[in-house]
Length: 376
Image (cartoon, rainbow, N blue to C red; front, side, top):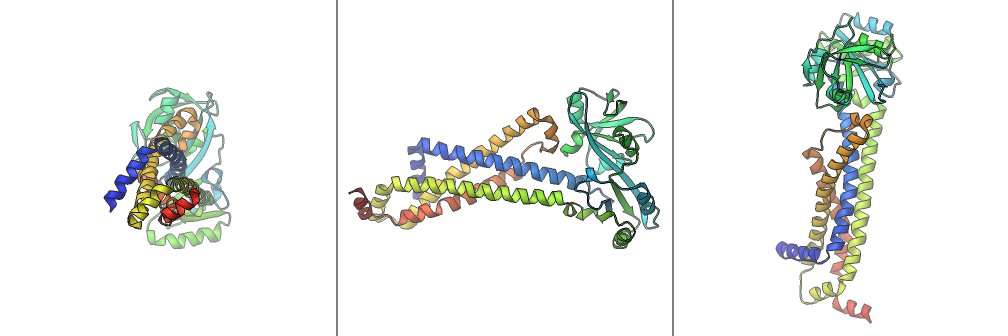
């Protein structure tokens, strides 16, 4: 039964090449937009999650009502009080910011005093030295910055504050954010950003992890303007991440709705055009299941082909975006992986299942008698 339905579905696809091409092209465009946007959202969230979940960090501290780490300010007095607590093993001050170089390209600044350890935990490859000096004006730049500004180890790079900084290393990471950043000690980052008292976040490591709950309670009681959370729960505490999740779900719903409506409309028209043929098949004894499977397989083939071409199209669009919108490339994934591809195919399968359900049901109700009556 399946073989007969498959052969008949393929024959009809080949018999209407223009119609088949338009369906595939439409699905491909819809799916490429869905895959591209959802990949950007998931990459942005994933990069922040990985960036803020260093090994050995128990608590992340930032300003309570800040929308993102970039807008957070942790006062020096609060840092001193937290880090002097006997339960605290070490603290790492993090300074974040962004600005534009002379060529107007956007560069992010990531300042942390434990960069060598951070680079190891992030599986970041560093050419040159990862040992940033807290006192001297030395920086490590991401591979993307090196390529964009055409600089290498030993060169000097003039930054936002008008000063030149010596490049002692070039870092490469699977995290796009780091590849498009300037990395320095926290004190140097403050100089670069012209914010001498600016600490955006505080990474706290405890002597004993079981003291995390007590430490969180103490910070909440003593520092009313700060928010302290477990490092594993950090992303859930940010409203921006929650909004991005909602955005991704809305995009998925719109993709599902639009794709399904297109397939329903197309296949209802197709069934109407083929009503005489379907009526004859019903009359000569074709099982209704065979007719249903024929239409469903046709929908699956066209939709899945649209998904494959949509993945190829979104990969091309990703490359174009990286070239045309360099500033935006920090949020873009390096490539669309197999997980994204399978996600797209799954969405296409669901769209096809919904889109051909009504037309397939309508096809089972067509008889030659009804067709002849309608033609009179």
